[in-house]
Length: 126
Image 1 (cartoon, helix red, strand yellow):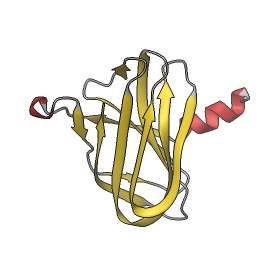
Image 2 (cartoon, rainbow, N blue to C red; image 1 turned 45 degrees about the horizontal axis):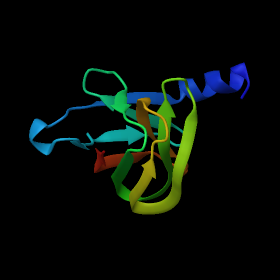
Image 3 (cartoon, rainbow, N blue to C red; image 1 turned 90 degrees about the vertical axis):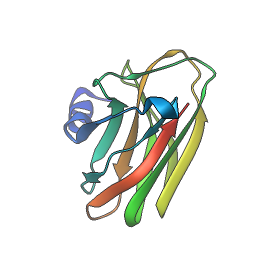
Image 4 (cartoon, rainbow, N blue to C red; image 1 turned 60 degrees about the horizontal axis):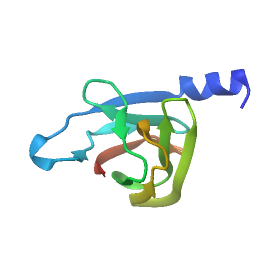
């Protein structure tokens, strides 16, 4: 990926902190947020940091949308590497994947449809 290409991706990336509910343990509910066409939202910890995930951990990531739309989902490591784990069209999307290496991660959704969508709910658990 070239320098300009990475800059373009980062300009389309909006970060949304997730408020953790201690009673839920490691399951976090996603806040409502809009995602413009071609834009990406990444979800991070409530303090704005990336999530610490031990290697070998399985992550379940689901989102609910206000309508059927095409999205891509996955994770971004603290070194900047992007891993897509899902692509599909629906109003309800989910993916589960194993994190290979212990480290810090955030989870993303890219809107690949032609108009703005709204995340109305969902969870990240590990």
